[in-house]
Image 1 (tube, helix red, strand yellow):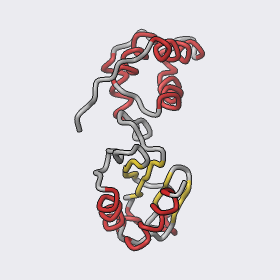
Image 2 (spheres, rainbow, N blue to C red):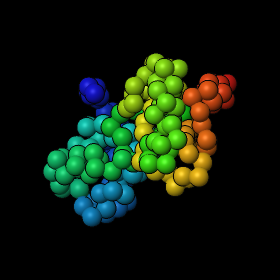
Image 3 (cartoon, rainbow, N blue to C red):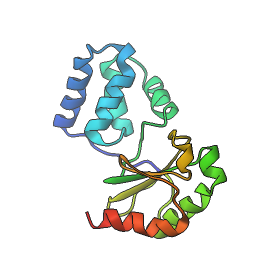
Amino acid sequence: MSSVKIELRKDQVDKIRQIAKTFKNDPGELINVLHKCQGEFGYLPAEVQEVVADELKMSVAKVYGVVTFYSFFSMIPTGRYPISICTGTACYVRGAEKVLAEFKKQLNIEVGTSSPDGKFSLSCLRCVGACGLAPVVLVGDKTFGRVSPDGVKDILKEFEEM
C-alpha cells in the first residue's frame, strides 16, 4: 500500500495543536489525541502523526506504533460509507470470504482502499460481537446480518442512492 504525501495547511496544524492542548499535551493521552484527530481528518496520515508526536514530545515511531497497532486507526482516507466485513471465526465459517470477494468485485477495490469517487472504502474486522447474525457487514454504523454474496448489490444500492 503506497502512501501519499500530503501538505497540511496552517489551520490543520493549528487544529492538531489545539486537540493536543485540550489533553494538556500529555503523552499518556496519545490514544485520545489520535482518536480526536482521526475524527477531524478522517484518517491519520504521517503528517498528522508528526505534529502529534511533536506536540506530545514523543517520537514519531511511538505514535506510528500506536496507530498501526490499533485497528480502529487508519492511515488511509476512508470512504464516506466505510464498509467493514467481519472475518471473525463465526463469520468466516459462514462465508464472509465470499461476501468480501463480492464487495471487492462490485466496487473494483481492494481491502484497505477507497473507491475513486471517495464514496466507499473496504476493510475487515475480527469480531463485531454479533456472531448469531454471521456473516456480518458494517456500513458506517449500520449493521447488516446474514449477508450473502447475492445481498451485496442491495447493500451497495442502498448507499449509492444517498
